[in-house]
Amino acid sequence: MEQVEREFFKKYHRAVVKANSGEVEKLKSKIGSEWAKEFREKVDGDLEGEELNQALEDYLVNDLRFCEEAKVTGDDGDLSIDVKGCHICHGNDVLKKEGEPALCPIVPTGLFSISRVGRRKASLDEVRKNGVVGECEISYKLR
Image 1 (cartoon, rainbow, N blue to C red):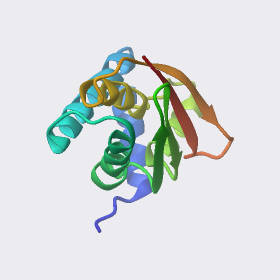
Image 2 (image 1 turned 45 degrees about the horizontal axis):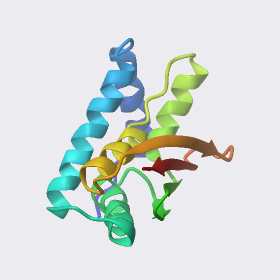
Image 3 (image 1 turned 90 degrees about the horizontal axis):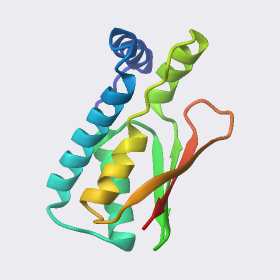
Image 4 (image 1 turned 135 degrees about the horizontal axis):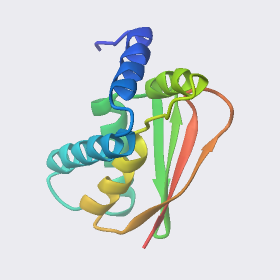
């Protein structure tokens, strides 16, 4: 498996965010939308429950490869993505230390994917960070 050097990715992410300052929220949504579109094309249909969870987990880990581990769990009322070893977070950590906005496209990727593949309305419940750069749990409420 091909690997991108984390230091390069961290610097690239920082440069992209700084080059698009003022447009970070739009950029985050556009990336999330594009990745959800790609996910929809990959699964080629609607999924629900455990099928959606497994397919989204596979897409995040094996297609996007933005992290070392991701676990997608949930039921009728919620969905959660538990992330470990996120490469994006290291760039965001540098940006935060510089007083710049962070950009995590995984949050909208989950929202758009739940809508487009799971055919459910979702809202972000919370993003829980445990203090380790690259680890978080993203929680969504489903309707």
